[in-house]
Picture 1 (cartoon, rainbow, N blue to C red):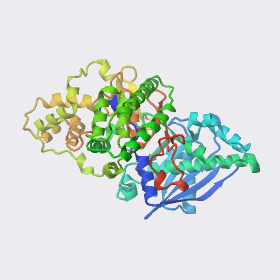
Picture 2: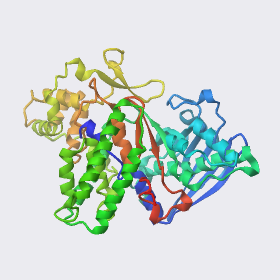
Picture 3: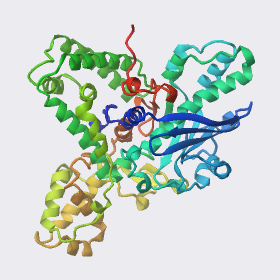
Picture 4: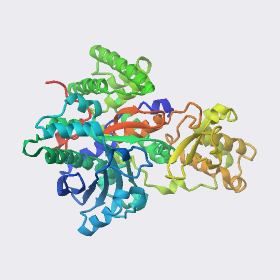
Length: 545
Protein backbone atom coordinates (compact mmCIF):
# COMPACT_ATOMS: atom_id res chain seq x y z
CA UNK A 1 0.00 0.00 0.00
CA UNK A 2 2.97 2.32 -0.50
CA UNK A 3 2.35 4.97 -3.14
CA UNK A 4 5.24 3.92 -5.38
CA UNK A 5 3.85 0.39 -5.62
CA UNK A 6 0.27 1.60 -6.05
CA UNK A 7 1.63 3.81 -8.84
CA UNK A 8 2.99 0.68 -10.56
CA UNK A 9 -0.28 -1.23 -10.89
CA UNK A 10 -1.43 -2.49 -14.28
CA UNK A 11 -4.80 -3.50 -15.70
CA UNK A 12 -5.90 -7.08 -15.05
CA UNK A 13 -8.82 -9.48 -15.37
CA UNK A 14 -10.47 -7.53 -12.55
CA UNK A 15 -10.32 -4.17 -14.34
CA UNK A 16 -13.75 -2.65 -14.81
CA UNK A 17 -13.67 -2.34 -18.60
CA UNK A 18 -12.89 -6.02 -18.96
CA UNK A 19 -15.53 -7.01 -16.41
CA UNK A 20 -18.09 -5.06 -18.43
CA UNK A 21 -17.21 -6.45 -21.86
CA UNK A 22 -17.16 -10.04 -20.60
CA UNK A 23 -20.70 -9.57 -19.27
CA UNK A 24 -21.98 -7.84 -22.42
CA UNK A 25 -20.68 -10.71 -24.54
CA UNK A 26 -21.82 -13.45 -22.16
CA UNK A 27 -25.36 -12.07 -21.98
CA UNK A 28 -25.59 -11.29 -25.72
CA UNK A 29 -26.34 -7.58 -25.35
CA UNK A 30 -27.43 -5.93 -28.60
CA UNK A 31 -26.50 -2.43 -29.71
CA UNK A 32 -28.17 -0.06 -32.14
CA UNK A 33 -27.90 3.51 -33.38
CA UNK A 34 -31.40 4.93 -32.96
CA UNK A 35 -30.67 8.46 -34.16
CA UNK A 36 -27.79 10.17 -35.94
CA UNK A 37 -28.97 13.70 -36.67
CA UNK A 38 -25.70 15.55 -37.28
CA UNK A 39 -25.22 18.15 -40.02
CA UNK A 40 -22.31 18.92 -42.34
CA UNK A 41 -20.70 21.15 -39.72
CA UNK A 42 -20.63 18.31 -37.22
CA UNK A 43 -23.43 19.72 -35.09
CA UNK A 44 -26.38 17.71 -33.82
CA UNK A 45 -27.15 14.71 -31.68
CA UNK A 46 -27.10 10.92 -31.80
CA UNK A 47 -28.60 8.16 -29.68
CA UNK A 48 -27.04 4.71 -29.26
CA UNK A 49 -28.76 1.99 -27.23
CA UNK A 50 -27.49 -1.13 -25.46
CA UNK A 51 -30.17 -3.73 -24.74
CA UNK A 52 -29.56 -6.44 -22.16
CA UNK A 53 -31.60 -9.25 -20.63
CA UNK A 54 -33.56 -6.92 -18.35
CA UNK A 55 -32.82 -3.29 -19.23
CA UNK A 56 -31.77 -0.92 -21.98
CA UNK A 57 -29.31 1.96 -21.60
CA UNK A 58 -28.81 4.74 -24.15
CA UNK A 59 -25.92 7.06 -24.85
CA UNK A 60 -27.22 10.49 -25.85
CA UNK A 61 -24.41 12.35 -27.64
CA UNK A 62 -24.32 16.01 -28.65
CA UNK A 63 -21.76 17.11 -31.25
CA UNK A 64 -20.59 20.72 -31.36
CA UNK A 65 -18.62 22.91 -33.75
CA UNK A 66 -15.97 24.13 -31.32
CA UNK A 67 -13.46 26.83 -32.34
CA UNK A 68 -9.87 25.74 -31.77
CA UNK A 69 -9.19 28.51 -29.27
CA UNK A 70 -11.97 27.20 -26.99
CA UNK A 71 -10.65 23.62 -26.83
CA UNK A 72 -9.12 22.77 -23.45
CA UNK A 73 -8.63 19.70 -21.26
CA UNK A 74 -8.92 21.84 -18.15
CA UNK A 75 -11.85 21.18 -15.87
CA UNK A 76 -12.55 24.91 -15.98
CA UNK A 77 -13.40 24.72 -19.70
CA UNK A 78 -16.93 25.74 -20.65
CA UNK A 79 -17.26 24.19 -24.12
CA UNK A 80 -16.30 20.88 -25.72
CA UNK A 81 -16.36 19.10 -29.07
CA UNK A 82 -18.90 16.58 -27.78
CA UNK A 83 -20.98 16.09 -24.64
CA UNK A 84 -22.79 12.97 -23.47
CA UNK A 85 -25.06 11.36 -20.94
CA UNK A 86 -25.98 7.75 -20.30
CA UNK A 87 -29.77 7.49 -20.14
CA UNK A 88 -31.55 4.81 -18.12
CA UNK A 89 -33.78 3.36 -20.82
CA UNK A 90 -34.69 4.80 -24.24
CA UNK A 91 -35.09 8.61 -24.29
CA UNK A 92 -38.23 10.18 -25.69
CA UNK A 93 -38.31 13.28 -27.84
CA UNK A 94 -39.06 15.32 -24.73
CA UNK A 95 -36.05 13.77 -22.98
CA UNK A 96 -33.80 14.68 -25.90
CA UNK A 97 -35.09 18.26 -25.83
CA UNK A 98 -34.50 18.51 -22.07
CA UNK A 99 -31.03 17.02 -22.34
CA UNK A 100 -30.11 19.31 -25.26
CA UNK A 101 -30.64 22.29 -22.96
CA UNK A 102 -28.51 20.87 -20.15
CA UNK A 103 -25.93 18.29 -21.22
CA UNK A 104 -23.87 20.68 -23.40
CA UNK A 105 -23.62 23.02 -20.38
CA UNK A 106 -22.22 20.22 -18.17
CA UNK A 107 -21.79 21.67 -14.63
CA UNK A 108 -23.89 24.71 -15.51
CA UNK A 109 -26.82 22.48 -16.43
CA UNK A 110 -28.77 19.90 -14.47
CA UNK A 111 -29.65 16.34 -15.34
CA UNK A 112 -32.05 13.96 -13.57
CA UNK A 113 -32.20 10.55 -11.96
CA UNK A 114 -33.03 9.20 -15.42
CA UNK A 115 -29.38 9.84 -16.33
CA UNK A 116 -26.59 7.67 -14.94
CA UNK A 117 -23.56 9.66 -16.09
CA UNK A 118 -22.51 12.96 -17.65
CA UNK A 119 -19.38 13.37 -19.74
CA UNK A 120 -17.61 15.46 -22.36
CA UNK A 121 -14.77 15.00 -24.84
CA UNK A 122 -12.47 16.95 -27.10
CA UNK A 123 -10.91 15.95 -30.39
CA UNK A 124 -7.26 15.17 -30.78
CA UNK A 125 -7.11 17.94 -33.35
CA UNK A 126 -4.19 16.84 -35.50
CA UNK A 127 -5.19 13.20 -35.70
CA UNK A 128 -8.86 14.05 -36.22
CA UNK A 129 -8.04 16.34 -39.13
CA UNK A 130 -5.64 13.82 -40.62
CA UNK A 131 -8.16 10.98 -40.48
CA UNK A 132 -10.95 13.13 -41.97
CA UNK A 133 -8.69 14.37 -44.78
CA UNK A 134 -7.31 10.93 -45.59
CA UNK A 135 -10.69 9.23 -45.72
CA UNK A 136 -12.21 12.10 -47.70
CA UNK A 137 -9.43 11.62 -50.26
CA UNK A 138 -10.24 7.92 -50.56
CA UNK A 139 -7.21 6.84 -48.51
CA UNK A 140 -6.55 5.29 -45.12
CA UNK A 141 -4.89 7.36 -42.39
CA UNK A 142 -1.17 6.94 -41.70
CA UNK A 143 -0.92 4.08 -39.22
CA UNK A 144 2.13 5.60 -37.52
CA UNK A 145 0.20 8.81 -36.82
CA UNK A 146 -2.66 6.74 -35.46
CA UNK A 147 -0.34 4.77 -33.18
CA UNK A 148 1.39 7.93 -31.96
CA UNK A 149 -1.88 9.30 -30.52
CA UNK A 150 -4.11 6.27 -30.08
CA UNK A 151 -7.47 8.08 -29.93
CA UNK A 152 -9.61 10.53 -31.91
CA UNK A 153 -11.27 12.05 -28.84
CA UNK A 154 -10.35 12.19 -25.17
CA UNK A 155 -12.79 12.64 -22.34
CA UNK A 156 -12.07 15.30 -19.76
CA UNK A 157 -14.62 13.97 -17.27
CA UNK A 158 -17.10 11.13 -16.87
CA UNK A 159 -19.28 12.02 -13.90
CA UNK A 160 -21.72 9.66 -12.19
CA UNK A 161 -23.09 8.66 -8.79
CA UNK A 162 -25.41 11.58 -8.24
CA UNK A 163 -23.27 14.42 -9.54
CA UNK A 164 -25.21 17.31 -11.12
CA UNK A 165 -28.50 15.53 -10.47
CA UNK A 166 -27.64 12.13 -11.97
CA UNK A 167 -28.94 8.95 -10.36
CA UNK A 168 -27.30 8.00 -7.08
CA UNK A 169 -25.24 4.83 -7.03
CA UNK A 170 -27.79 3.26 -4.66
CA UNK A 171 -30.45 3.39 -7.38
CA UNK A 172 -28.56 0.98 -9.65
CA UNK A 173 -26.27 -0.95 -7.29
CA UNK A 174 -28.65 -3.91 -7.10
CA UNK A 175 -28.76 -4.45 -10.87
CA UNK A 176 -26.55 -7.40 -11.89
CA UNK A 177 -24.95 -5.49 -14.76
CA UNK A 178 -24.13 -2.57 -12.46
CA UNK A 179 -22.97 -4.56 -9.41
CA UNK A 180 -19.25 -4.14 -10.11
CA UNK A 181 -17.87 -0.59 -9.65
CA UNK A 182 -18.10 2.06 -12.38
CA UNK A 183 -20.00 -0.11 -14.86
CA UNK A 184 -22.29 2.75 -15.95
CA UNK A 185 -19.28 4.97 -16.64
CA UNK A 186 -17.44 2.19 -18.49
CA UNK A 187 -20.53 1.51 -20.62
CA UNK A 188 -20.80 5.20 -21.44
CA UNK A 189 -17.17 5.32 -22.64
CA UNK A 190 -17.56 2.07 -24.63
CA UNK A 191 -20.53 3.52 -26.51
CA UNK A 192 -18.82 6.91 -26.88
CA UNK A 193 -16.04 5.16 -28.80
CA UNK A 194 -18.59 3.95 -31.35
CA UNK A 195 -20.06 7.43 -31.72
CA UNK A 196 -16.60 8.92 -32.28
CA UNK A 197 -15.82 6.38 -35.02
CA UNK A 198 -19.15 7.09 -36.71
CA UNK A 199 -18.73 10.85 -36.39
CA UNK A 200 -15.28 10.94 -38.00
CA UNK A 201 -16.61 8.81 -40.86
CA UNK A 202 -19.58 11.17 -41.23
CA UNK A 203 -17.33 14.24 -41.35
CA UNK A 204 -15.08 12.58 -43.93
CA UNK A 205 -18.06 11.68 -46.09
CA UNK A 206 -19.37 15.23 -45.82
CA UNK A 207 -16.03 16.48 -47.15
CA UNK A 208 -15.19 13.79 -49.68
CA UNK A 209 -18.54 12.69 -51.02
CA UNK A 210 -18.64 9.53 -53.12
CA UNK A 211 -14.87 9.02 -53.16
CA UNK A 212 -14.67 8.79 -49.35
CA UNK A 213 -13.04 5.63 -48.03
CA UNK A 214 -14.47 3.61 -45.15
CA UNK A 215 -12.14 3.55 -42.16
CA UNK A 216 -10.24 0.27 -42.09
CA UNK A 217 -11.80 -1.83 -39.27
CA UNK A 218 -8.34 -2.80 -38.01
CA UNK A 219 -7.36 0.86 -37.68
CA UNK A 220 -10.68 1.67 -36.04
CA UNK A 221 -10.16 -1.14 -33.53
CA UNK A 222 -6.72 0.15 -32.59
CA UNK A 223 -8.25 3.48 -31.58
CA UNK A 224 -9.45 3.96 -28.02
CA UNK A 225 -10.89 6.87 -26.09
CA UNK A 226 -8.31 9.11 -24.50
CA UNK A 227 -8.73 10.59 -21.08
CA UNK A 228 -7.10 13.48 -19.26
CA UNK A 229 -7.25 12.94 -15.51
CA UNK A 230 -6.01 15.37 -12.90
CA UNK A 231 -6.09 16.03 -9.18
CA UNK A 232 -9.86 15.82 -9.00
CA UNK A 233 -9.58 12.03 -9.03
CA UNK A 234 -6.60 11.63 -6.70
CA UNK A 235 -8.41 11.98 -3.33
CA UNK A 236 -10.97 9.35 -4.33
CA UNK A 237 -8.99 6.43 -2.93
CA UNK A 238 -8.46 8.32 0.35
CA UNK A 239 -12.13 9.25 0.66
CA UNK A 240 -13.38 5.72 -0.12
CA UNK A 241 -11.33 3.41 2.11
CA UNK A 242 -13.79 0.50 2.07
CA UNK A 243 -14.28 0.62 -1.69
CA UNK A 244 -10.54 0.87 -2.37
CA UNK A 245 -9.92 -1.93 0.11
CA UNK A 246 -12.35 -4.11 -1.82
CA UNK A 247 -10.51 -3.49 -5.08
CA UNK A 248 -7.12 -4.29 -3.62
CA UNK A 249 -8.43 -7.23 -1.60
CA UNK A 250 -10.02 -8.79 -4.70
CA UNK A 251 -6.77 -8.43 -6.62
CA UNK A 252 -4.70 -9.83 -3.74
CA UNK A 253 -7.11 -12.76 -3.35
CA UNK A 254 -6.88 -13.45 -7.09
CA UNK A 255 -3.07 -13.43 -6.95
CA UNK A 256 -3.09 -15.69 -3.88
CA UNK A 257 -5.40 -18.18 -5.58
CA UNK A 258 -3.18 -18.41 -8.65
CA UNK A 259 -0.02 -18.64 -6.55
CA UNK A 260 -1.63 -21.63 -4.80
CA UNK A 261 -2.11 -23.55 -8.06
CA UNK A 262 -0.04 -26.69 -7.57
CA UNK A 263 0.37 -27.68 -11.22
CA UNK A 264 -0.11 -25.64 -14.39
CA UNK A 265 -1.47 -27.34 -17.48
CA UNK A 266 0.24 -27.02 -20.85
CA UNK A 267 -2.64 -24.80 -22.00
CA UNK A 268 -2.31 -22.48 -18.98
CA UNK A 269 1.44 -22.23 -19.43
CA UNK A 270 1.05 -21.55 -23.15
CA UNK A 271 -1.54 -18.83 -22.54
CA UNK A 272 0.70 -17.10 -20.01
CA UNK A 273 3.68 -17.12 -22.39
CA UNK A 274 1.54 -15.77 -25.22
CA UNK A 275 0.09 -12.97 -23.08
CA UNK A 276 3.58 -12.16 -21.80
CA UNK A 277 4.86 -11.78 -25.36
CA UNK A 278 1.86 -9.66 -26.32
CA UNK A 279 2.36 -7.52 -23.22
CA UNK A 280 5.93 -6.89 -24.33
CA UNK A 281 4.61 -5.55 -27.62
CA UNK A 282 2.26 -3.22 -25.74
CA UNK A 283 5.05 -1.91 -23.53
CA UNK A 284 7.25 -1.36 -26.59
CA UNK A 285 4.53 0.97 -27.96
CA UNK A 286 4.13 2.77 -24.62
CA UNK A 287 5.73 6.21 -24.72
CA UNK A 288 5.75 9.14 -22.34
CA UNK A 289 7.21 12.64 -22.27
CA UNK A 290 7.45 12.70 -18.47
CA UNK A 291 10.94 11.93 -17.07
CA UNK A 292 9.63 9.80 -14.19
CA UNK A 293 7.58 7.59 -16.49
CA UNK A 294 10.37 7.50 -19.07
CA UNK A 295 12.73 6.07 -16.45
CA UNK A 296 10.09 3.55 -15.35
CA UNK A 297 9.55 2.46 -18.96
CA UNK A 298 13.28 1.83 -19.40
CA UNK A 299 13.22 -0.33 -16.28
CA UNK A 300 10.02 -2.09 -17.32
CA UNK A 301 11.44 -3.04 -20.71
CA UNK A 302 14.52 -4.38 -18.98
CA UNK A 303 12.26 -6.29 -16.59
CA UNK A 304 10.39 -7.87 -19.49
CA UNK A 305 13.64 -8.94 -21.15
CA UNK A 306 14.78 -10.47 -17.85
CA UNK A 307 11.41 -12.17 -17.35
CA UNK A 308 11.31 -13.57 -20.88
CA UNK A 309 14.80 -15.01 -20.49
CA UNK A 310 13.87 -16.57 -17.14
CA UNK A 311 10.60 -18.20 -18.21
CA UNK A 312 12.25 -19.61 -21.32
CA UNK A 313 14.36 -21.80 -19.05
CA UNK A 314 12.08 -22.10 -16.00
CA UNK A 315 9.77 -24.98 -15.19
CA UNK A 316 6.27 -23.51 -15.19
CA UNK A 317 4.52 -26.82 -14.65
CA UNK A 318 4.89 -28.29 -11.16
CA UNK A 319 5.56 -27.26 -7.55
CA UNK A 320 3.37 -24.12 -7.49
CA UNK A 321 5.00 -22.55 -10.57
CA UNK A 322 3.32 -19.13 -10.27
CA UNK A 323 4.28 -18.81 -6.62
CA UNK A 324 7.87 -19.60 -7.49
CA UNK A 325 7.77 -17.06 -10.32
CA UNK A 326 6.44 -14.29 -8.05
CA UNK A 327 9.06 -15.12 -5.40
CA UNK A 328 11.78 -14.87 -8.03
CA UNK A 329 10.41 -11.51 -9.28
CA UNK A 330 10.58 -9.95 -5.80
CA UNK A 331 14.37 -9.72 -6.13
CA UNK A 332 14.85 -9.84 -9.91
CA UNK A 333 12.40 -7.15 -11.10
CA UNK A 334 11.45 -3.59 -10.21
CA UNK A 335 8.07 -2.83 -8.65
CA UNK A 336 6.71 -1.95 -12.09
CA UNK A 337 7.78 -5.34 -13.43
CA UNK A 338 6.56 -7.19 -10.35
CA UNK A 339 3.09 -5.67 -10.60
CA UNK A 340 2.84 -6.37 -14.34
CA UNK A 341 3.75 -10.01 -13.67
CA UNK A 342 1.15 -10.19 -10.89
CA UNK A 343 -1.50 -9.13 -13.43
CA UNK A 344 -0.24 -11.50 -16.13
CA UNK A 345 -0.35 -14.68 -14.04
CA UNK A 346 -4.10 -14.13 -13.57
CA UNK A 347 -4.85 -14.33 -17.29
CA UNK A 348 -5.09 -18.14 -17.70
CA UNK A 349 -7.37 -18.51 -14.68
CA UNK A 350 -10.78 -17.03 -15.41
CA UNK A 351 -12.44 -19.62 -13.20
CA UNK A 352 -10.39 -18.62 -10.16
CA UNK A 353 -10.47 -14.85 -10.74
CA UNK A 354 -13.54 -13.52 -12.52
CA UNK A 355 -16.08 -14.24 -9.79
CA UNK A 356 -14.25 -11.84 -7.48
CA UNK A 357 -15.64 -8.94 -9.55
CA UNK A 358 -18.90 -9.13 -7.60
CA UNK A 359 -17.03 -8.44 -4.35
CA UNK A 360 -15.42 -5.17 -5.47
CA UNK A 361 -18.32 -2.80 -4.78
CA UNK A 362 -19.09 -1.10 -1.46
CA UNK A 363 -22.78 -1.22 -0.66
CA UNK A 364 -22.67 -1.19 3.16
CA UNK A 365 -23.01 2.36 4.47
CA UNK A 366 -23.32 1.13 8.07
CA UNK A 367 -19.55 0.74 8.42
CA UNK A 368 -19.20 4.53 8.53
CA UNK A 369 -21.04 4.77 11.85
CA UNK A 370 -18.70 5.20 14.81
CA UNK A 371 -18.87 2.56 17.54
CA UNK A 372 -18.86 4.78 20.62
CA UNK A 373 -18.55 1.84 23.02
CA UNK A 374 -15.13 0.83 21.69
CA UNK A 375 -12.39 1.63 24.21
CA UNK A 376 -9.60 4.15 23.81
CA UNK A 377 -7.10 1.31 24.04
CA UNK A 378 -8.67 -0.60 21.17
CA UNK A 379 -8.73 2.49 18.94
CA UNK A 380 -5.03 3.03 19.72
CA UNK A 381 -4.28 -0.54 18.67
CA UNK A 382 -6.16 -0.05 15.40
CA UNK A 383 -4.23 3.15 14.67
CA UNK A 384 -0.98 1.32 15.43
CA UNK A 385 -1.91 -1.39 12.95
CA UNK A 386 -2.69 0.98 10.08
CA UNK A 387 -0.40 3.93 10.85
CA UNK A 388 2.36 2.66 13.09
CA UNK A 389 4.87 3.92 10.55
CA UNK A 390 3.42 7.44 10.79
CA UNK A 391 3.90 7.72 14.54
CA UNK A 392 7.65 8.14 14.08
CA UNK A 393 7.36 10.90 11.46
CA UNK A 394 8.32 14.41 12.56
CA UNK A 395 5.05 16.14 11.70
CA UNK A 396 6.49 19.54 12.63
CA UNK A 397 9.11 19.34 9.87
CA UNK A 398 8.21 21.52 6.86
CA UNK A 399 8.97 18.70 4.44
CA UNK A 400 6.45 16.42 6.12
CA UNK A 401 3.57 18.88 5.76
CA UNK A 402 4.69 20.84 2.70
CA UNK A 403 1.45 20.30 0.77
CA UNK A 404 -2.23 20.84 1.60
CA UNK A 405 -5.34 19.55 -0.15
CA UNK A 406 -8.19 21.99 -0.60
CA UNK A 407 -11.26 22.48 -2.81
CA UNK A 408 -11.23 25.24 -5.40
CA UNK A 409 -14.00 27.79 -4.94
CA UNK A 410 -14.46 28.17 -8.70
CA UNK A 411 -14.96 24.54 -9.76
CA UNK A 412 -15.43 22.72 -6.43
CA UNK A 413 -12.63 20.34 -7.46
CA UNK A 414 -9.77 19.04 -5.25
CA UNK A 415 -6.47 20.86 -5.55
CA UNK A 416 -3.04 20.39 -3.98
CA UNK A 417 -1.16 23.52 -2.92
CA UNK A 418 2.08 24.52 -1.23
CA UNK A 419 1.25 25.06 2.43
CA UNK A 420 4.01 27.58 3.10
CA UNK A 421 3.69 29.49 -0.16
CA UNK A 422 -0.10 29.86 -0.53
CA UNK A 423 -2.80 31.00 1.93
CA UNK A 424 -4.62 27.65 1.87
CA UNK A 425 -4.10 26.11 5.32
CA UNK A 426 -7.45 27.41 6.58
CA UNK A 427 -9.22 25.55 3.78
CA UNK A 428 -7.38 22.24 4.12
CA UNK A 429 -9.39 19.06 3.54
CA UNK A 430 -8.93 15.91 5.70
CA UNK A 431 -6.82 14.16 3.09
CA UNK A 432 -3.75 13.57 5.27
CA UNK A 433 -4.87 10.51 7.23
CA UNK A 434 -1.36 9.62 8.39
CA UNK A 435 -0.73 13.02 9.98
CA UNK A 436 -4.20 13.04 11.52
CA UNK A 437 -3.75 9.50 12.86
CA UNK A 438 -0.51 10.51 14.57
CA UNK A 439 -2.22 13.52 16.15
CA UNK A 440 -5.16 11.42 17.34
CA UNK A 441 -2.85 8.76 18.73
CA UNK A 442 -0.95 11.39 20.72
CA UNK A 443 -4.18 12.81 22.09
CA UNK A 444 -5.52 9.36 23.01
CA UNK A 445 -2.37 8.56 25.02
CA UNK A 446 -3.57 10.94 27.73
CA UNK A 447 -6.76 8.99 28.41
CA UNK A 448 -7.48 5.73 30.23
CA UNK A 449 -7.35 2.71 27.89
CA UNK A 450 -10.71 1.44 29.12
CA UNK A 451 -12.56 4.74 28.54
CA UNK A 452 -15.29 4.56 25.85
CA UNK A 453 -14.16 6.36 22.72
CA UNK A 454 -17.41 8.34 22.79
CA UNK A 455 -16.17 10.14 25.89
CA UNK A 456 -12.91 11.03 24.18
CA UNK A 457 -14.75 12.32 21.10
CA UNK A 458 -17.07 14.42 23.23
CA UNK A 459 -13.96 16.31 24.36
CA UNK A 460 -12.06 16.08 21.06
CA UNK A 461 -14.54 16.00 18.16
CA UNK A 462 -11.74 17.05 15.78
CA UNK A 463 -10.57 13.41 15.80
CA UNK A 464 -13.87 11.86 14.74
CA UNK A 465 -12.73 11.19 11.17
CA UNK A 466 -9.58 9.42 12.36
CA UNK A 467 -11.51 7.24 14.84
CA UNK A 468 -13.95 6.36 12.07
CA UNK A 469 -11.11 5.34 9.74
CA UNK A 470 -9.45 3.31 12.50
CA UNK A 471 -12.68 1.39 13.10
CA UNK A 472 -13.21 0.88 9.38
CA UNK A 473 -9.76 -0.75 9.19
CA UNK A 474 -11.20 -3.78 11.00
CA UNK A 475 -12.99 -4.77 7.80
CA UNK A 476 -10.76 -2.88 5.34
CA UNK A 477 -7.10 -3.76 5.93
CA UNK A 478 -6.18 -2.39 2.50
CA UNK A 479 -8.12 0.83 2.99
CA UNK A 480 -5.19 3.05 3.92
CA UNK A 481 -2.30 4.32 1.83
CA UNK A 482 0.86 3.65 3.85
CA UNK A 483 2.47 6.93 2.80
CA UNK A 484 2.40 10.63 3.55
CA UNK A 485 -0.07 12.30 1.18
CA UNK A 486 1.07 15.87 2.06
CA UNK A 487 4.85 15.49 1.98
CA UNK A 488 7.10 17.61 -0.18
CA UNK A 489 7.83 14.67 -2.47
CA UNK A 490 4.38 13.10 -2.78
CA UNK A 491 3.44 12.19 -6.38
CA UNK A 492 -0.34 12.44 -6.90
CA UNK A 493 0.08 10.65 -10.23
CA UNK A 494 0.68 7.46 -8.23
CA UNK A 495 -2.79 7.83 -6.72
CA UNK A 496 -4.25 8.46 -10.18
CA UNK A 497 -2.53 5.43 -11.65
CA UNK A 498 -3.75 3.15 -8.86
CA UNK A 499 -7.36 4.04 -9.58
CA UNK A 500 -7.04 4.08 -13.36
CA UNK A 501 -5.41 0.64 -13.44
CA UNK A 502 -8.61 -0.75 -11.94
CA UNK A 503 -10.56 1.01 -14.68
CA UNK A 504 -8.41 -0.92 -17.17
CA UNK A 505 -6.43 2.03 -18.54
CA UNK A 506 -3.17 1.46 -20.40
CA UNK A 507 -0.23 3.54 -21.62
CA UNK A 508 -0.19 5.99 -18.72
CA UNK A 509 1.43 9.25 -19.83
CA UNK A 510 1.94 11.71 -16.94
CA UNK A 511 2.07 15.32 -18.09
CA UNK A 512 3.22 16.53 -14.66
CA UNK A 513 3.17 15.09 -11.16
CA UNK A 514 -0.54 16.04 -11.02
CA UNK A 515 -2.25 14.90 -14.20
CA UNK A 516 -2.01 12.05 -16.65
CA UNK A 517 -3.29 11.00 -20.05
CA UNK A 518 -4.47 7.46 -20.68
CA UNK A 519 -6.23 5.43 -23.34
CA UNK A 520 -9.37 3.35 -22.80
CA UNK A 521 -10.69 0.47 -24.93
CA UNK A 522 -7.83 0.62 -27.45
CA UNK A 523 -7.91 -2.71 -29.28
CA UNK A 524 -11.39 -3.62 -28.04
CA UNK A 525 -14.04 -4.87 -30.45
CA UNK A 526 -16.85 -2.51 -31.35
CA UNK A 527 -20.37 -3.43 -30.18
CA UNK A 528 -21.38 -5.04 -33.45
CA UNK A 529 -18.33 -7.34 -33.31
CA UNK A 530 -18.40 -8.17 -29.59
CA UNK A 531 -18.53 -11.88 -28.74
CA UNK A 532 -17.13 -14.22 -26.12
CA UNK A 533 -14.04 -14.96 -28.23
CA UNK A 534 -12.86 -11.34 -28.34
CA UNK A 535 -14.32 -9.81 -25.16
CA UNK A 536 -11.34 -10.30 -22.88
CA UNK A 537 -7.76 -10.12 -24.20
CA UNK A 538 -8.18 -7.14 -26.53
CA UNK A 539 -5.84 -5.01 -24.40
CA UNK A 540 -2.87 -7.03 -25.59
CA UNK A 541 -1.73 -6.56 -29.21
CA UNK A 542 -2.16 -9.59 -31.44
CA UNK A 543 0.99 -11.56 -32.24
CA UNK A 544 2.19 -11.41 -35.85
CA UNK A 545 0.80 -14.31 -37.85
